[in-house]
Image 1 (cartoon, rainbow, N blue to C red):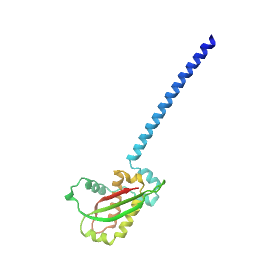
Image 2 (tube, helix red, strand yellow):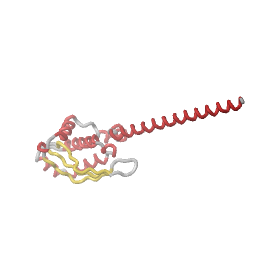
Image 3 (cartoon, helix red, strand yellow):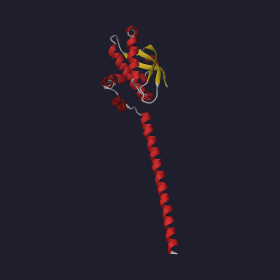
Length: 185
């Protein structure tokens, strides 16, 4: 009789420990899934400028310097302005560039229009169109999918293009950038 009681107690303890082990495993799996979802959400919604800075070489890191406060003010104004306040638009041809990627090939096809500060600037831009296209292609092709897929990422690219082009221009300035086509594949 004592053998049966100890066997029953042992099987009862085994069943209890098995149930407890299953509960612990389920809780850990749920926590891992929730943690993974939170991390994925944060990576998709934020701009990975820290990762980009690590991956970039020194010359490219200088190119990615923080935009001036004047540029930030201008870009914020472009979102809140009325149509009647928008200046002269200078359309550029379509750009098709390979995005910087470790896994797989991604490309960006975009059409950009520049908002000019004055009519005299369009003459200077006409004469420098190959240089302008080169600078825009270099900026766009240095970006990853994560950098340009968010609204903040597009804003940073716009600011970088404005800063780069304004540093080359002598007859005025570019007030804003408008993407009229933006396709990532």
